Image (spheres, rainbow, N blue to C red):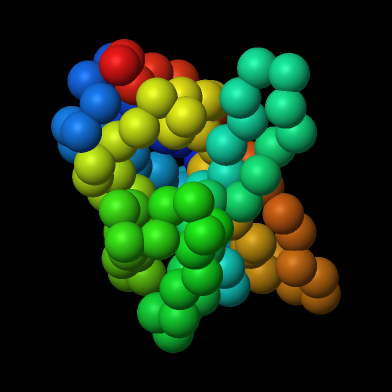
Length: 119
């Protein structure tokens, strides 16, 4: 079994910064894509950013230029650096990982961490 544990959520003022971290543990052969998704009250879960094992990144248009995703393949960790935070960034943020568990690739989710941006 694989567990994803997030940390770093909290309250930040608009324009401020926050750093989210996620660590994967368990029987892991390798992890393809890691990423962050978020879900605001009354809305569907949406992609924030993803990063492949090779370092290719993908961002939602709403966070481009403000958020940066990075990962440490050796430690199976992924970090989301949130800068210039906006009130509309308020949501529960979920870590996601597509893990190679032979003979398949399985998707795992963290339990979520609350991010609140005050205006």
